Image (tube, rainbow, N blue to C red; front, side):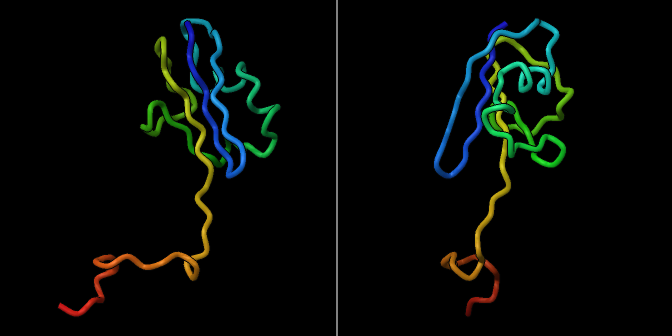
Length: 93
């Protein structure tokens, strides 16, 4: 069956299509795609994965046409992110 594997870094995004056996898991598809060689910083032990935006475990089974996504940690400095009105609960009422 054919599936997609997607990963994004700030300066590089990739979406690979690969053929995997019908009984493949998320982890097997990631490994077969070759994306771990392209992005050696991916750590499946700590990074979350999903299928079509829904978090799943590495041993989750796949269906034809699934898009496996590897999520990287969101890193931002709270001091540099502007505060949105209505968030945080300490505005005047």
